[in-house]
Length: 98
Ligand code: SF4
Ligand code: SF4
Image 1 (tube, rainbow, N blue to C red):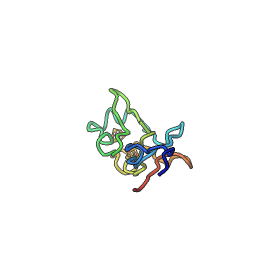
Image 2: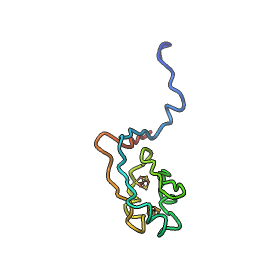
Image 3: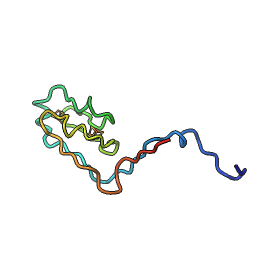
């Protein structure tokens, strides 16, 4: 390696995931009322591996930028209260192997 070549940090070598977030969410909780009144366990806050869903007293905050696109919330919400789409082309998560 030449002396001028910039050293790569451990953090740069280790990164496995990168995100290119769209400005608009690809995930929508259809009704906060349903969450509030019919879903005491708020299980999306448990099953989502990326912790996208956070309950904030009376509404669900959706941190769509960190979504791993696993699709679990399409089937995991017992009230079919989450509208799920893939992010627009060119946006979303980027996986890197090795
Ligand atoms: S699982 Fe569905 S109904 Fe329950 S809190 Fe999450 S979005 Fe709302
Ligand atoms: S697709 Fe997966 S990672 Fe994305 S919000 Fe749904 S459960 Fe979370």
